[in-house]
Amino acid sequence: MNLHASGHKVIEQGFFSDEGLDFAARIALGRCVRGAGEIGEVLATIARVKNYATWAEQWQVTAEHVAAEADRSRAGGHLVSARSGYLRAATYWACVVDGLTVEEDSDRLGDAFRRHREAWDAFIDCSDGAHLAVAVPYEGTTLPGYLLRPDSSGARRPTLVITNGSDGAVSDMWTSAIAGALERGWNAFVYDGPGQQSMLFERHTYFRPDWEAVLTPVVDALVARDDVDATALTAYGISQAGYWLPRALAFEQRFVAAVADPGVVDVSTSWTGPLGRSMTELLADGARRKFDRNMNLAVKLPGLGRTLRFRGRPYRHEDWYDLFSAVSEYRIDPEIAARITTPLLLTDPEKEQFWPGQSAQLAGMLGDIATLAPFSAEEGAEFHCQPMGRLLTENRMFDWLQDRLATS
Image (cartoon, rainbow, N blue to C red; front, side):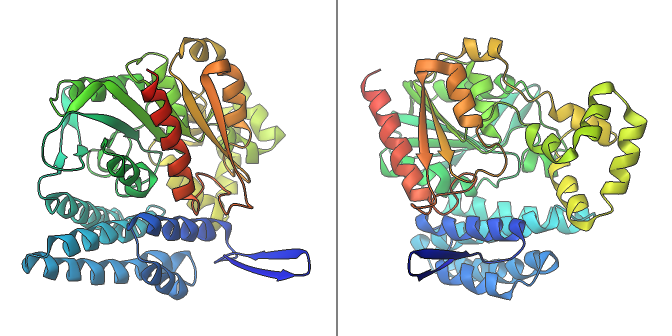
């Protein structure tokens, strides 16, 4: 973002004129604050990207270069350098995956995801035993999970349980919450739930609104471990997990405190908002045929079709009507809110694109147990999940969490 001051007027210029690409570039740059990216590598890659068609291609060039250097460091026994390289490579391969999720070529997408997860697993393996892969028993199978610890001592520690959003990579959580937890002497646990990452791309599972069925098995697995302090569990949910986490907290009450980044009351508003009155009425009236006919015409617009393919992939659906109906189930009603007793910090960024005003709405539903944490453009921390204000977010949320632990 370039800021040019002329008198008292500040002109903001983004990285791209396309809002989606610009937001993605801000996210990639924001990850650098905790070493999940290198500023020069990110800016050089962004400079080569001309449009959506070249996003994945250029990030792959960077990812392959960084992964190869990490391989050389590892082969030479330089594990600190290797860890750094593999973490950055995982971030860059995740950018490739993001660029390919709008395409129909599942082979390219599958290969990019596999290489992303290989880089992340190599990062875990180069941690001198501090970080571990931990499978979570879940409905006859397991959820892939990772317990990241400050060291390999096995000491019993407070643990932050991290729930990802609708499309984020597991490596994204390093900058979002993991690194901040480790620096404060905590463990951090991150996992793929149904419809997320490996559970979508490799096991072809789908999202579910009742996330307590996911989070409770995660907690069960953690409290059984000697290196987790079961009395000092906290939780963090980012993006769409700003719905999933509060929903789960209505039923799973073993957390001392939690953070929703941001708070989400109704996931569907980001879907139905652009529809217009007539389409919204067709959806409400159950007019499947007319709704699908109109949507099939609308998605001929390249931008809209690309966005909906990307966002709709993790939901079980047969047609557009099914998809929009499914998303409408992801909502916190007053009865669910009334069951929540866990103190919640709700981030509330200026210029929130997807669920504006919903953090404040959720805070109003929760009453005294909710705390709003505003973030502003003046701080450089505007937009959904404060992509370029992650260190600011980390400091505020961990200060709040530590205060809750101290008084629990």
